[in-house]
Image (tube, helix red, strand yellow):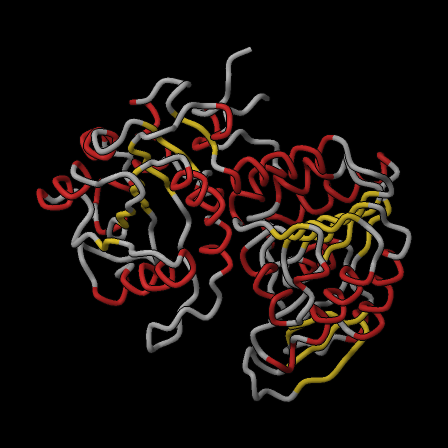
Length: 398
């Protein structure tokens, strides 16, 4: 798969529309608590400015229900961009209003316009043709640098790309880097290759598991999804999260792993609690002794040790999904121990965005990871072997 990249097309002096992913976490006072996604887009923005382009930036933020909502405005992002780029960033009052289109048309070389939240437009998530065409009319060149939403066929991701030929659309530096990393790690990893798969549900990760089994040497399963596998093996898991309808699939995954000679790791103990509550009484227990009405909310100390040992000889580690309810301090220890073990390894370590990226930031391990993806869902679909809609449009036909 050969991707058209920004460095290979002529953007000099042109109007460039860059789809970014500025969907950053904010506190209740609208302060940005982690600006990694904004900082990740700077290379592409600066490259365009250095090439005398006028730049139109677009992103979504959160999930606004209908039209403009102040708490989902991109104004705080415009302020942070101003600080990071050390230059003015014009803030549009909407996405495709008359004034905004006029401002975009009159942008001078070196100027930056940030459009309002793409999801204030109902047509964005519906991949509306009219909206796609209007967005495309703003620019000469389209750049996708939003890996985190490239698995979605939305107007500013996929729809807009249809209005540009392959010499006038490309992947930004961040998107190209993410695609190359995942392509390399899934198709040509240094061995032993260990995947750690966590999170709450098997249903969200099933295709990824099927695609990974033939490729990895070891597979480690943690988080809420482990209980579907444990129940499939006949263990009493109390009130732990189980997807009963997926028990046959869990058995199939384990059978396939056995057939392929993949070492398959499940928790041997858990931290169980009486209720899903930060204040609930909790205790470590072996998986054979989970009390009937209790639920497992984290991997236990013996499991953390077992998983850490399984990582010691790894040359490639791919991690997607936490080991427990890491948002509650009482159930965060298992995830933190695995984070430290991954960080301490000598392997190439790739963290698949979303919760896992947030987790390694909280544990202070992010600088020790080889690569942290900016997109959870998108990285998962790449692991599943899918071609993302936002990427497909940028592939050069060979």
